[in-house]
Length: 95
Image: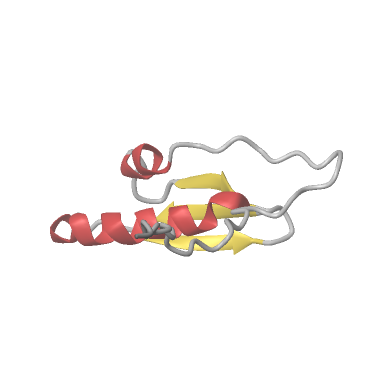
């Protein structure tokens, strides 16, 4: 009699290749250091502004929206303005 052995191969789940989160910058392009967003926005007084590098745009907008909801009873509100020429995001507390 012949021995019949069954071998099973284990296939791993498909994982798409990772995409870079930021585009590659050419030589000589400097990206400014990031700033802590939430602590900076929480300490703003009405009428004060804070500037962030444009690379933090989505994080700044998300944090601003979260703080507006968290502190809605106290009337906390702010406006976000994007300055494309200076590559800055400016947050001004309005209430």
